[in-house]
Image (tube, rainbow, N blue to C red; front, side, top):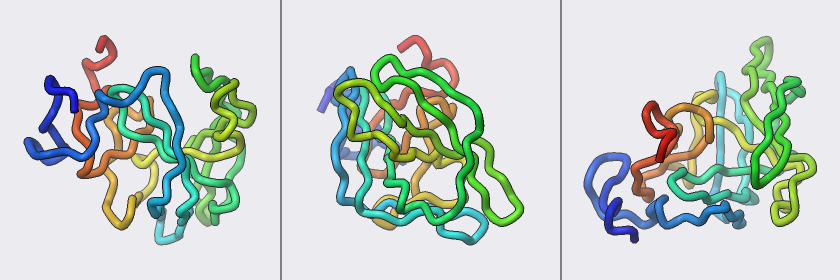
Length: 168
């Protein structure tokens, strides 16, 4: 644990299992056997134990779920961005009945070398869905919505992404 940031969690000072300042840069991906679920407007968006999570210094993990785990329709939003590590990202609107959640998810259809495992997986912004859970624990969305991280009690920060954090 990085001593400069140890002991700060979502709920204030406490022992932490993972400190985001110990995550690597460039980011790394790893398979997660944790149960990752999300709902919106009373509908299950996805429910899987086949997620991949991406870990990067100062950011809470981002969970990528298999496309076949997504139970509601998605449509391309037309927006694209570029990550210096993972490559070009495309964004997806989530359709829940007659409601469209703009750019609720993103994917790397043809990621750069080293990130091929992310091809076609979908990462959802927890701030855009009603409920996101990791092993039944409600997730707190990472501030700022730029990174889309999922904050759980087993993480220590501080977390990059909120106002005033762009310089660190």
